[in-house]
Length: 350
Image (cartoon, rainbow, N blue to C red; front, side):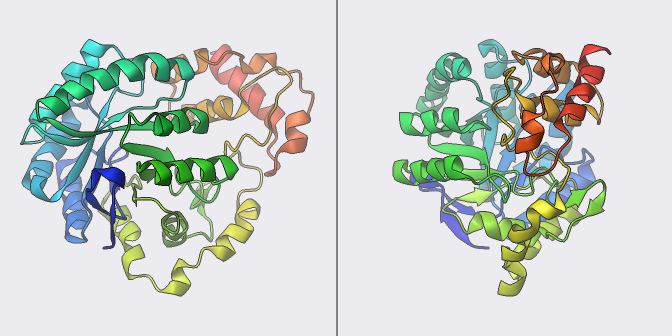
């Protein structure tokens, strides 16, 4: 395992980390994943599920014992804020304290402000949260403060503010344009540790319509790790996926060569939205990428969180006039008009 500095924190983290969002919640599976990871030198673990009771209790009941048994070997990043509608300070504080208690030593190496993607959220909730987290630092329960997000302008503000030590952001073969390059450079200049999420673009780079693409996990990881980042945290479901990720460490230079995949990535994903925003601007100001993303997520089951996310969009899919501007701009040949109709059917007529 290669290790790099996590920005100005000085913490040494393996270039391959572990994202836990998609872990199957059986104790045997969770224990095997963590054991496999730790034996290979993985030490950075992102803990998305912050609530230690209620709907996430099974996550902590099953994963908590394994974490505690390896605690001295791990750099644990616990999220502050759920990513859903629960951003009240009392709720965030209660959940964070429950998680600290579950970690075995009442200490998190990093606290990650979850999904700060709007200006008002950065100006309001994030600033209040940072003030709260400073108190945990003062009391010796927290090392550093980080932030996760998906929007470059907000992430860039956070990095340049000097208020965060770690940034968790999605970068991959499909999301590494000029804006992302500027963000990466800002992290380097400011000493902010960059943790890359979604190196496989949520699996889209590896599978299309259930069929594997020619792109390999090793190529995806090699692409990301060629950048000045600290670590990447692929979200795995089980030990088999963890082992597939860890093959990067034994891969040959030929296997790591991502240039063929990069040259043909558009061909592999023809007709599939990758949320790149090249379709914008929309004359009706529809956020096309977020609209399609919400619809794609809903294929796995429509829930209150997805309904709330769609409801929060300022302009809904039903505002589409079918002018075709987006279709003409899309580099992947997506039938955006059909996807807007689908969103209306899912969210506005259900």
